[in-house]
Length: 111
Image (cartoon, rainbow, N blue to C red; front, top):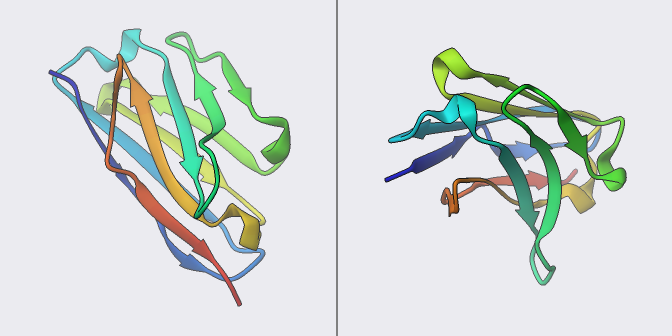
């Protein structure tokens, strides 16, 4: 059974950066696509970025230029680097793979 654990969230000021991580256990993580989502208060879920098994990536247009997604299959980890954070980026960020999802990590951006 797949288990996904996110980490790296926190409170930052506008313009700051965070590196979120999604670590998997229970599966061969390297052969699966991984998707990062976010859900802010009162908002619908938004797709942030995704990465395929071979490293191909997709980033939502809303965050393009500020987000980098990468994977380290040796560590069963997918990372999400978010730069130039804005208050509207405040949300619970979580990863999903193989039909499962983690509990998420909270990102709060405020001055």
